Amino acid sequence: MTRLTLGIFAPGLLVAAWIGAQGGEAPRATLLWGGDAEGGAPFVEADPADASQVRGFDVEVAETIARGLGRRARFLQVQWSSIDQSVERGDCAIGLSGMEDTPARRARHSVTVPYFEFREVLAVRPEDRGRFSRLADLRGRRVATLGATVAYDVLVAARDSLGLIPVSYDDDVHPYSDLIAGRVDAVLLDHIIAQRALRRRGGAGFVIQPQAVAAGRYVGVLAKGDSALRDSVDVVLRTAMRDGTLERIFRRWDVWDPGQGALFRRVAGQGEDIAVAVGAQHAAPLRPGVWAYLPSLGRAALITAVVSALAMAVAVVVGLVVASGRVYGPGPVRAVMTAYVEVIRGTPVLLQLYVLYFGLADVIALSPWSAAIIGLGLNYAAYEAEIYRGAIQAIPAAQWEAALAIGLSRRAALRHVILPQALRIAMPGVTNDFISLLKDSSLVSVITVVELTKQMTITAVDVRGWLGPGLLCAALYLALSYPLSRLARRLEQRLAPAPA
Image 1 (cartoon, one colour):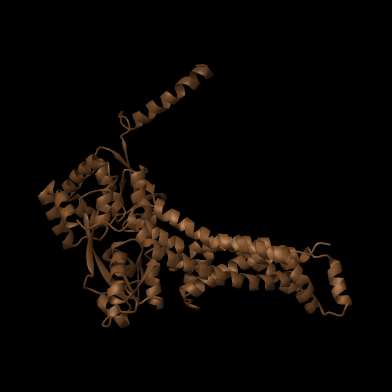
Image 2 (tube, rainbow, N blue to C red):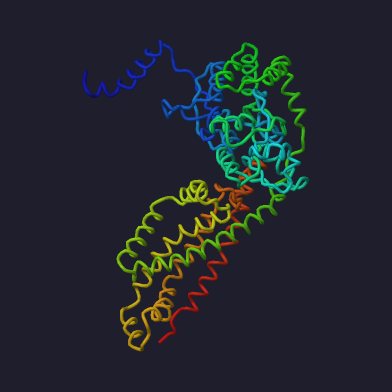
């Protein structure tokens, strides 16, 4: 066989061989489903035996649905808060990752029958077991939860009526570690998440109050126009409820309880009418439009501005010290300052925030605001130091000689002669860094500071759309950064040397 003939027929031969290996059948159609492996077990997590695969009860539910449809399940990693939008975009056919049944979700998407019922429970420190058994007991206290969840909605609703303080996290691990550290007074989350966190800590550190604050259900989410596929998925789910498939899955993952049996009897027993019944139960008004969130976005923009300004003040002061030490300090000082710059510039600011806030909690428990300002300030100080060092070294040596010749000490010469000239040179770079810091402040949401980008994300999830909140957020960032650019130009003009 010639090379040309082999090149023509090789792809077909490979396909034929693959089909033969599958038992002579063509490959089945794929059901692409979206989930977030960051949510962890028992929902979706990376398989410890093979990190390229995922496992969890939602993984098995997806595989059950795929088999019932005659397809093969394939997982797509999607950030949890973006699953709704990914489904509507067509990135995946169905979202299954602890997706909560809410009125807004049912109004904007095709939603399956519920397949799991959860309870919102309070977790408190052991010594507070008797004090904080209900939300009403937490007036004026900080209560942690995941953002964009039923629990978060419950806390926001209770904020005005009970005066408690909702604290939003991006993951379900740090709320409990902060509870133990005393940074928050309680955590409100699904009972599955609370029990998993308690097992992870060997049953110590906090207690789960037996009385449920609210109840909810997990559903599959499909695009609004995929009602036909949704109906087929409902048939598969009801069948899995009747034949015990779902019960076996939930028992394998140790999340089965009598409440699930009652849910199955209601859902599987009523047949096709359950979708209408559930829809009627959730016939709540839609959430307000994006403009209704403008005051909260404005408050978040103010937080962004304050954090950025204070962090930049830290960066300027520390940067000057580091730059001076690198240029004029003795050998050991120069070595330390150089190591600081290289370590800070060589590691992500997000990692630095995690280490500062969570990693050092046992040594020093910084408040979220303190950690945000110090973390961003120390990070940008490394970059400021390099700008200042370059500006200082750009000053001609004759300036030093002239200053010393008129009797100034080295310190006085640095303060009155060198630094003012260096500042003029460094000003454009400093301004650019300030604007960059303004945008990088969005990272402090990982340590529970609800700044502008985090509030935009919460708003986008609430209104089930990203365009409007995104444009408003961009406009607010521009409103914050543009005056800085104008101010920098004026300062450059004032600091410019007079014409000869």
